[in-house]
Amino acid sequence: MKKNYPKKNQKVFVGLSGGVDSAVSAALLKKDGYEVTGVFIKAWTPEGYPCTWKEDRRSAMRVAAVLDIPFITLDLEKEYKKEVVDYMITEYQEGRTPNPDVMCNKEIKFGHFLKFALNNGADFVATGHYCQKIFNSQFSIFNLKEGADKDKDQSYFLWTLTQDQIKRVLFPIGHLSKSEVRKLAKKFGLPQATRKDSQGLCFLGKIDMQEFLSKYIPPKRGNVLLENGKIIGHHNGALFFTIGQRHGFTVTKKTEEMGPMYVVSKNIENNTITVAPKETKTKKSLPLGSGHNYVNIKEINLNGKVPNKNLTCRIRYRQEKIGCKLEEDRVIFEKPQTGIAPGQSLVLYNGEICLGGGVIS
Image (cartoon, rainbow, N blue to C red; front, side, top):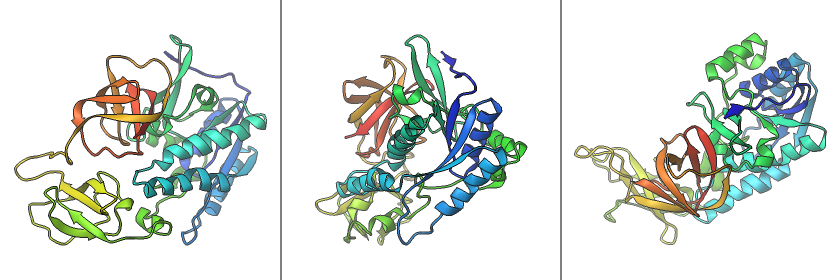
């Protein structure tokens, strides 16, 4: 395998979020001779929450001014509300745990934004994702590779990208560490060099999920149970929780031996959640509920041949990779896994190569 470097002097639309990663991406592309245009994507903003998009847009405009590149604002508010927010709310209503960041990449950044860029003369779009794109000469396809900075790697959120999308995408900072990106921002004279990273959901930022969802899903008080069925507390609705969640419920009958409690299952019909400790004094690394030997996945997207050996996967972001096998729509784990949340993404890897994945069903 080798990296694929497209020809210079081609048009690239860079998604400028106002942050340091996309700013440095634009600077590097211009330095390499590309004809760069900065594009700020305006997303939907929920009522009652701080409006940050104007500040982010001003920050993105400063990047364009410093680099002396054209700047465009692309209004995708309606698309974001329909394809990311409404999807997220519906998934929670159905008792599943959605992954809005994956959907944002699929539908917004590499869906509508990519289509807009190509329709307006761009050869590529670029983003500040910590991911690498390489050309696999054995199969004549493009592959996604983990970012060099493992603490920032975002390949997990990009598993839905198809060959048609990957060949039109550039990840200028994928080979860099976050500290290197900060240094480059200072070198290029970008004001984002000292700007804090954004947190939380794609575009929406850091929001209290239960508070946000309660505007669309009526809270309903229910019981918090131990695995033996004993009631130890209460919550505001089983629909609001995901497997492995530690916060958001109240434990009223807690003992010193319990330690932090995590959601291991939920019963939507009875409106209950079951919790368990991760560790006890007698047994460390206590599994979060009973383990599963396999899961079924849907909406599968794969780039390249899936190997019979050395295949691994993640069932949540930043999780240590799990040895596994893929048999049609079933992923079989080498060791039983816990904390599996239907609706979340299962992403497949061969070494550092992200092969694709699917949605846990």
